Length: 42
Image (cartoon, rainbow, N blue to C red):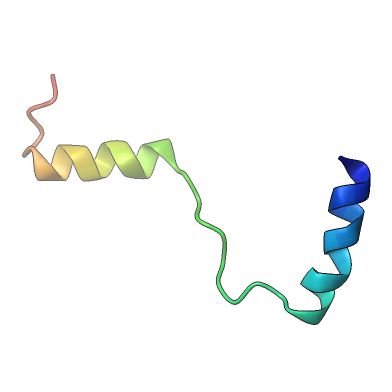
C-alpha cells in the first residue's frame, strides 16, 4: 500500500487539489438541524 501511495505523490505535486476537502463539524450539523426543525429535536 505504501508503494501505491508513494506513486501518487508526484501527481499531487504536479496537479494539486483545486478545492478544500470537505470538513465535518458536528456542532454545525446540529445547529443546522435545529434551524431546520425550528428547535424541535428534543
